[in-house]
Image (cartoon, rainbow, N blue to C red):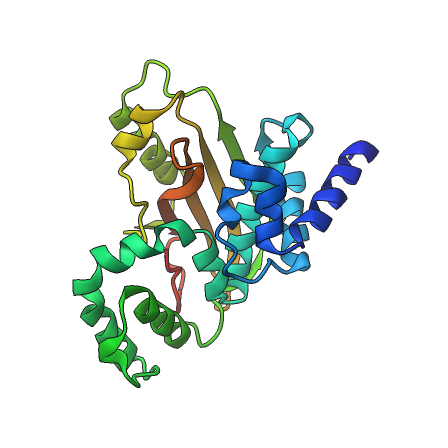
Length: 267
């Protein structure tokens, strides 16, 4: 790796270790994953691990070709995912979804009872559970379900990430959505297509229509579970140019056929 690239990576690791509000102030909309500043900054070890995934894995465009704003966004997304599932850290799960929490709390208020039942089945914290809204119910479910984190370790060298900047071209939005499904099918194994528990508050049709070429990140992270199963998380993050935010649009977990998995990823 070139010395100049190492310097950039170390500089971003230092910057990202600052409180989220300072990062957002320095970087503006490019650091929208970090706003609002209501969660703790990401642990430096996971920032460095996120950078290692980008440096050691397959990345398009090449890491040296990314501008600084793009680098910090990608490192933040990857680092938060690593922290969420290798540490069972609900705060990093929330950090990638903060701007959508209020909408989800209102839209899913009537569904919270379903999560309450799961919490009780798992022997989780049921004190005052009937008064908990959607997000707090998810927190209690997460805590009860992940007595131990679901991931033992991520494998940086098997990371695959591609940042698309030029829009859909001649493709329809339906074709674009099918392209993610095709990537998941090519991954092989047993796939779980996640129904996102905190979806973006604007549907993808509006996001694609509202402002300029659609920009998105296709990401694949390889990991091992505590039962020794090999797994991959495939995720598509999209830039909402109107709101100035990156959001998770689709996610699938893929495991080796016949693998024994005790705890799946919550997305």
